[in-house]
Image (tube, rainbow, N blue to C red):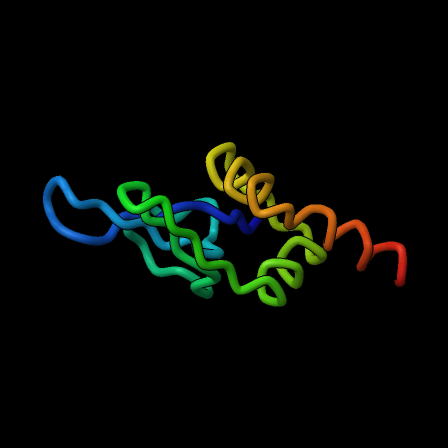
Length: 87
């Protein structure tokens, strides 16, 4: 099963997180399937590769709670619902 979750990057006290599609059995810093965005909690910046995220969500990937909150702030689920109605 694939999950969309955060992968920690950056240095001490300056964490930046990549949003990645990763196998459930992998550890946090493990090998990811694809990088689909990043989140900087210090500057409160977010970059999302929307087509890649929608692709993984359509294939059944489950976002973690934190990633789900980031998606809700970016209103990504509205696009996901629109794409499902088209199909």
